[in-house]
Length: 154
Image 1 (cartoon, one colour):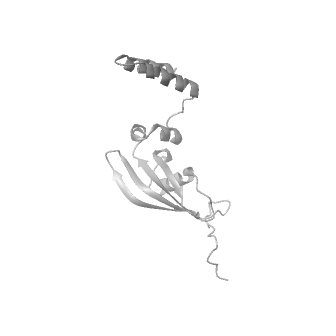
Image 2 (tube, helix red, strand yellow):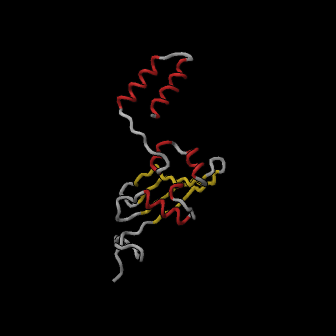
Image 3 (spheres, rainbow, N blue to C red):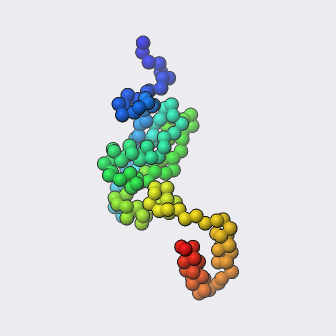
């Protein structure tokens, strides 16, 4: 019998232990950005029968298709699911080197990708430092900010 119109396409990948639904990754608006030493593009992920696809899995797929040696150099973010499910769209950056990634990526994405360890500080400490900073004016402000940074590193 022929498959129905609404059937979920099951994958026939030999490397998958369980035959999970097929995930298709398409890229659009590909730009080579030499100033920021990266490739950047929009990623369309088609995943029928799945709620969403983990970024680690997507990074591996993109690394394979774009011949990237280290999956850490791939930064995926801004994913939104389309209404009705089955499709997500997000943004991808592939950096040429780890140094370029550390230089141009925002801190929170560096933490996500495992380049930097997140330093744990309490909310109270952050608020106290902010309020101390508010009280200082003029040239002393820069010195105080430098001292506060030194204190936070310990």
